[in-house]
Amino acid sequence: MAVEVILPKWGLTMEEGTLTEWLVKEGQEVKEGDALADVETDKVTNQLEAPVSGVVTKILVENGTEEIAVGTVLCIIEEK
Image (cartoon, rainbow, N blue to C red; front, side, top):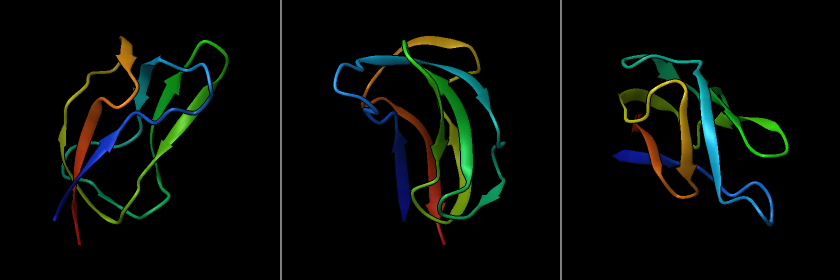
């Protein structure tokens, strides 16, 4: 099953973030909890974690993309 990985809301006032760096590539296998990307907000830089184990099948947002709204789909993981 394909799982959409979205930009979560990490704080009460967070509305958007900047994807500073992907730590994985398309086709890479990940385990639940693995770090997928670094995301910078107005207050802090967080690591986006894989919500499931599987294979990253599609990255939808490029490194350096700014003003990504909370809830935006960042990548797709095909669950194993």
